[in-house]
Image (cartoon, rainbow, N blue to C red; front, side):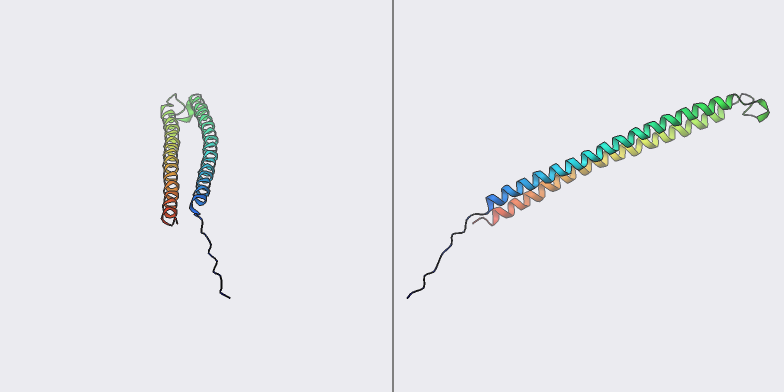
Length: 139
């Protein structure tokens, strides 16, 4: 008796894989955006704490100025009403720290934006390459 050869039809698998890949891409982007939104909320909370500390520092500087202006004359140049040196020094320290915090915040914001854009582009490119690969193996 002659052997019968069975033939199997190979179905095109690329469409379901592309759909699955699209779903994975969407979920990956959503997960990344969610993580980034958590990061941004943490940065906002940190900024609120920094603002609170800067305000406390301003109050401290105000207190130091008031105290130094009330010192008796026996304490030398500080006590004779010449508190300009202390006030200017305190003002410079407060201004420097505020500028430092603003600079770090600006750098952080720019870095976050660039990282987000770059990550989105990388995800798009990776899934585009995956789609191109699937298109090349289509039966």
